Length: 550
Image (tube, rainbow, N blue to C red; front, side, top):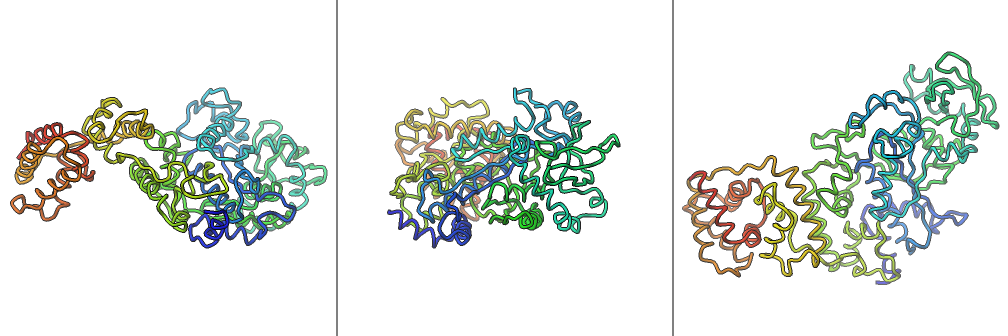
């Protein structure tokens, strides 16, 4: 496939990253700004708590759009036609101590200070709480292979890099007030100022009225917490802008062309867009996405710690499966909890296997295509599917089947034990020859330990179910040792169809097998499980079940 074929297909694609990129291309038809500089994508992070998957998804989704834009203009990542900035708002005031952090009392003593000036509660050698959280975010972004530039708000404020932008805000102080005050409650409006000074006495970020003394010099006047009237510079890290003003200031100062944000910031986007215009800039294009919810349907919060962390997902599933789960339908809410991981893992591999055989228009809608580009795949001039990492290959065992196996083996199962069973099912069952399967076994063991084993309960069979199980045991006693999983599946089917066992449909039969033998309501193809677990082991499982009832 040539680059021109990719460009043509990309410009007709209905996949959401291409739809977003096509809107940006209307803004810059030549694929660059008028001065020839790269198109700038930005993603923001508030380091008031440990980064969670909601933070990561914004970088990933923005990268999807960035790479889609490059495809539209026929550029490769190394051409430098685009930039991605991951911006951390670590000058923001520390408003509340998250309940999931250590050293709560110490943190409480530093409330209202900029996050970059709050000590690290983890005692991990970082200069601040924000620096610790920034490092955690960057660690994962680097692990995934993103290409990005990290910018900390504190660096820009304290170095003076934002000083000219701050002077611009001070010069337009009244115009910004005219935008913001009508949106605020009376009590809030009484103390609102676009700029928040840092108290010289307490180091707190202050929410107080501010008088602009000299915009060009950056001088402001305000009443400090001790009641004294203070006149000081707002430059060089001595002040912080209100969130909506800060958002707009960054857009203008950095020249941001695309930034997406969550539905909870819809009003922020509106007001910040108006402020950006006052400051002489333009609101960037962007997508408003739905928020992630926990298993109870509640919004994920850094302060509550009720969402999965990046590390937790990676204990139970691959980084590719995380990206796969994030990809679809950004405008639809998704629940984010441990229960979604197994299907995400298996769906990722199903789409990965399918990619190489798909026509180009279908490839561009396949999440695996976008994931490959997000971390540097498809870098050559010829961008056929064969260059996608792993395109066309598959896992010899599904994650769901592995989970059923380790569930039967119990919480004490280890990797060597699992590999010994895989010899019944996988050709060349050797970790060195199947490194990705080896990683998947680690994930399955961890998932079983934390989610399955603590709640696993196999029920006793009814009388008719016991009769069907005895029939299955008799069949297994007579099958040849080299019988295939498909032939075993057929044998299981035939038993479920027999009228004397009283199953209304085959689903009832398989549900009974799952509940009685595996302790689950859903499960794998039983032929595959029996082949993997082994004929004699499966018969022993049936024998144990028959001992419980029937």
